[in-house]
Length: 415
Image 1 (cartoon, rainbow, N blue to C red):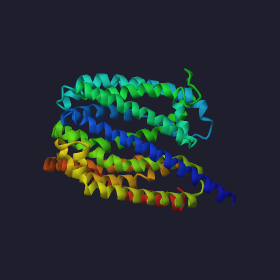
Image 2 (cartoon, rainbow, N blue to C red):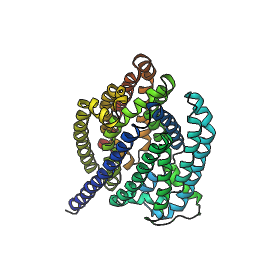
Image 3 (cartoon, rainbow, N blue to C red):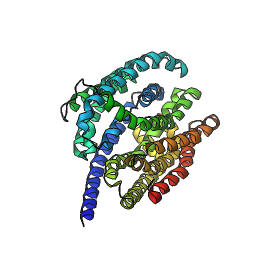
Image 4 (spheres, one colour):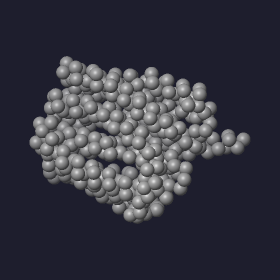
């Protein structure tokens, strides 16, 4: 009886969390669509491509230096308040490293993609990770304690600022710098709010033992993050290098409209189910039941959205982006299938994190990268951005047998 009550409690919290995160992700995605739709009227595909080049390198250095501290803090059984100051110092150091690396690598980025405009934009964007480094790590408590309504208001406020600043700058400047200005001002606001809405306030105290503890636990998150980033952006790099920045701009917007809108569903459930799975990780039967129930719901939702996106791809591109972006329609249709596969298959990640099997995520992601990379360049050379759209599908399918294998081990043997 007691277990039944607890299970209902966890289920209720999960449903509440999903509801709040659905509102948040829906709001974020809606704001992103508004931002892109408005800026697409003032900026060209080439300008979007230039911004895309900058973000490729920005994201790469963020992944290379990812410590996995946030995930480790959620997994931590002890009082996380004792780790906040140490985590903050680690975050500041990481921000300095990313900022310095971006500033120094900017000339090579511009040369590799043959895009001179990317030089100064990359250097300007290097300020963003420097600012983000000062965010109070205590905001992770929103997720750890399942208080997603606070995270909703916190994150939505930041995204509203980003959208307003970016659109205003785009209208005034007619430049891709609008995106960077939006991100920078939003980062400043995030730092300010993180010290106002959550406790404790971090200080300059650093404990090497605690740093080693959380970083050691998060090292597989680092590797998984790097591999996942490569899986998501190796196609961007290849398209930008082989076809140029205008096709890159078309491809990235097709990717955002199709794949990211579908993957948002998976992200919502993963963020909520991760701390919920931790609560029942000791009971393999309940864990298995909860996992397959969640995965089934994800499949139903993404299938519905996927069919709509596929059937009305031309109309959606025309309404959201405008006539000059119609060259992305065929790629968008193919990427819808990828988005559906990715959303469903990645539902296993929150389960693996809950049972502290981060290394399995790394293995699966690496296999997917290999599957993608083998076919990517031949497909691009043969069919352009449409060919590139097939490569992520191949990579995702390559990882599915391994997902099934590890799920069977976890549920049948308590691995």
